[in-house]
Length: 276
Image (cartoon, rainbow, N blue to C red; front, side):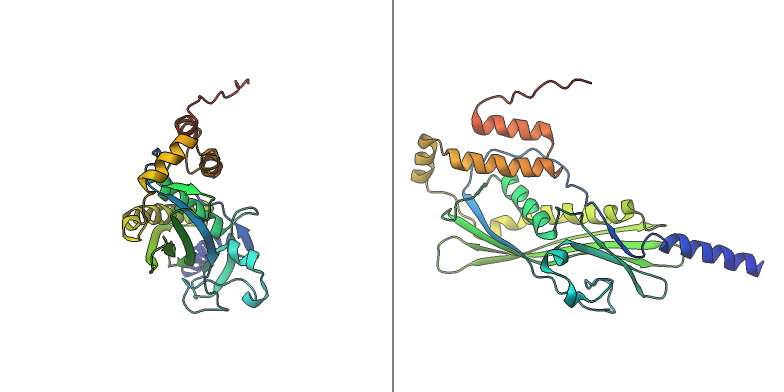
């Protein structure tokens, strides 16, 4: 009986750890799509999004970013893709996890911020002279799995420092956080995604709550009138380009993209018929 029990325990450990050795990629879930209102407030230029996370070699805390190797030997591009790692029952770090090629932490954060701004009625502009300029520092964006005796705990946390320069003497800064947690039996992608999903949603909700505290200002009435009369095509193009990126990333649906495009251009989107 004792031998059988050891076999069962050993099999459980193998099943829990077998999928987390080596290197693997993970597609992050999209935040839930919501209708994006028409831009009624000021324009916002996102000046920069930087990955300022601190990685360590063999940290004792699983929430500290690390890789299966020497962190000093990875490039900035590779670092920007790393999003998680798991520990075994002895607390030893195992395989690491990254976003797929073409995706990155800074890209994800930019899309989340753009979505949050547009949800609150701001226009994301490519014009550096827009009334608001925003710089985003990614301090934390990491997921980790900790193994218990019969289950795994998956956690993910996000922390970004958002700094606004709107032309006055001082800048305005806010820390925006997101956190998610999930329990599972195996180290499958869905269990990691079920931890990251709530973290992304929590970040978006917290960003909306912080947006009024970070000093964003509206365009002046005169400027708004001039832009309206001139039909600021460049800003319309920029906003549609951002919306298209949100649609491609799954953050908004095709229907929501079409509805917002119609509002911005005043013309219906004639989508070609799909034939089986």
